Length: 366
Image (tube, rainbow, N blue to C red):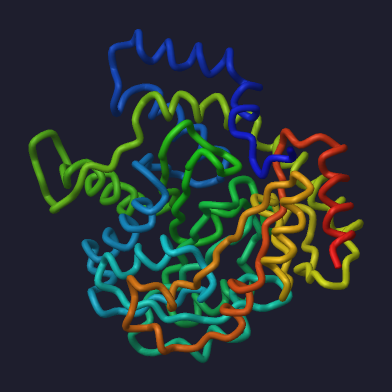
């Protein structure tokens, strides 16, 4: 069996260090907002290249608190518009609507599967206050054109960096390209905890302070509540685990890149489409997506050969029941991607033989 993602095996590589970190935290008697959090926030800021990191409960909350903070700071207000790719995971959309903001969908480029920067400007109105770029599949979605548009129209550039830890654009890591970024440490991510976890990165001190308060019941000091916040904190044990795993992130990403490059070089079945290959630093291959109009048959065939695959994601946000008000809208490129996408196994614990098995299986499908 070629597993899609063997989390047990991934964790086993660092078992002794993780066990020591967890034991140290347990014996410290301090389980929230302690030295492990401080250490992780400092290390992650250094790694990403921002002045501030604020640990929060999960990646969704990270994005929610960014937009809530902008509202509390008077930079945005409910009803303002946020441009977002139409083919993202639902969390990107939830963070916008949770704050009473309005998502404005822009289609992706079918060649990159990322937001089409040539279509963004026509979506900007006088109510547009932000652009949320999603580094989907571990691939950098940022471009200089996006940066220029945000400057021209004074838009806050927010990054959804849930899938792209360690990815770069011209020497700058994703998570440090915009005004703020939300990060997820869900176990299956390139940098994953052993439970939920998230963070906000930014160079804006006021934003960082407001996010930290919002995620701690709205408190600026103990028992002093400036905002109507919520409990959304990264716990000490998860921070301790992330402190261990962060040390190995670049090594793991390099291995993912080798697998991704092998896939690009050797997948040759005309019944699948591959996104265009990017610069080496611009993709950390969180997911390796292929497109096929015969997606379901392809998945069934590969499964019969003992290879696990996943679909990211079968239903686009505007067709979800949760957003029935958008169900009649049409975004044909996004709908095509969601209908045809299949994710092949890719992880830092795959063997060369397993990678070759995946390629052989995909190429043999007819």
